[in-house]
View 1 (cartoon, helix red, strand yellow):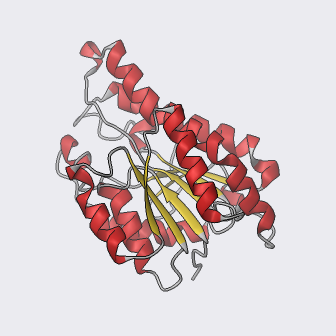
View 2 (cartoon, rainbow, N blue to C red; view 1 turned 30 degrees about the vertical axis):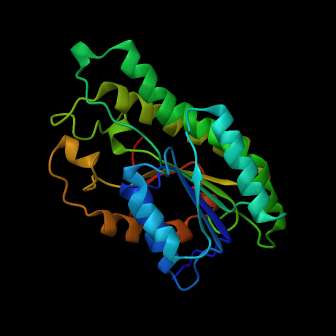
Length: 258
């Protein structure tokens, strides 16, 4: 079975839900990354206490203040990660932070559309730009050929709700701005896969499933647990290679329709 052997991983939106569970399961692995950078907007706020408790128990888990909508916050986070890595690159960037607004088509509005697009699309774009030097360095430092999540990769957490073919859960939640943002994130992933191919940086759009997170429960009663989704995600990531570059896959690695 393929194993994730990343020296360093950065996860945005790490204070709850899938982001928090990714950090929790990564630190429990026998071959865990040496560095796990867990970012969130307000590490000192009440919603980050579980993450702080986790970091207190595990060396190498570094909580970093990061607002993915704020360019200066992103640059400050990139500088801090660069300092901590001491010349090494960043192997895996997981753009997990996102927001959901469930406006129906007839009452969708420009303000919510802009806010969701900025968080779910522009944020991952800026993150990938800011951390590109570290991803390139990780790719150059790795002796293995080809692409992998252990070498250098960007994983954009997307949603089947952004699939133009599927329009997942339309009858439960129209969520126009969210769907449009995830469709755009999928295209961003495709563009990244083309632009960063020469650097051998793997770029993937990942649907984690309809999961029992605060966000997932807003659309009904999801059956997939956070623990189960993340377990399968961490089994899927090591199996991905250059043949999967630009793919849109689910938590089990199944290719999804655009």
